[in-house]
Image 1: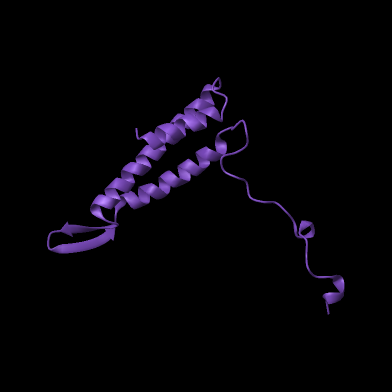
Image 2 (image 1 turned 30 degrees about the vertical axis):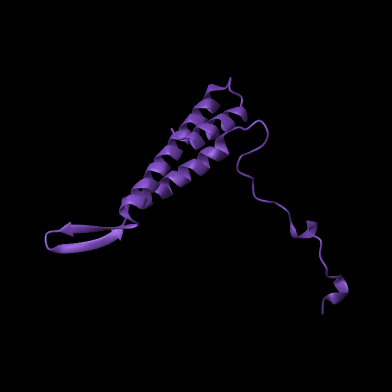
Length: 113
């Protein structure tokens, strides 16, 4: 495991209740997904974003298979991030739920026609 992933694991473990084995398992699974994502990055850097498929005399250019895997991994990581119960707030900020009425406006009702 790379130093960055090891540091990330330690940082995430500090943000959860380590007595809760389910939360610890989620962090470990998240780190494994990050390792797989890193392996996909290496394969794409090595082979390029596209690959050539040869079938007899035919040649096809298609996206690297790791590109599709990266998309799947990204979805899984986001879902896992949202499910981890962090003790000091979520790792992924929730979207702002402010309404139009709550926002300050530079316009006055007399500006309306």
